[in-house]
Length: 151
Image (cartoon, rainbow, N blue to C red; front, side, top):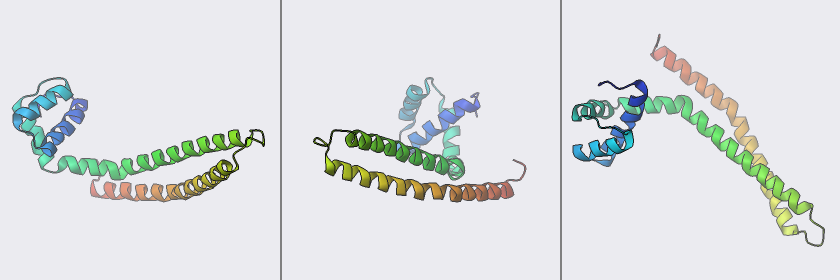
């Protein structure tokens, strides 16, 4: 498929998929790829990559990646975000709690306590899901190994 490195193909194939998804003409696709890829490709190169995209092979590769890695990565990002929100909420609570009693906003303190409890519960639920996700990933890896021995 042309003289492109593996890394270049990892950039090029999703660009060709974009062109197919957006319904670009050949001319539009080549212009789009030139801008995004940083260099021109031939129409033959474009159609070679487009055949791969149209065959569903690219979609299968993406789905395989997502089921093996992407779901776990997304779960970790969600956990990290909630932990960050929890830290910010606790900081806000401590700031409000340490104000002199005459200027303390009791309703704000109540709301922050509620938010802290809610975030703690959500973190606990998601953290309990992490071992389950690890088991699912292990099963997927076993099935992939059975279906693709030696690869």
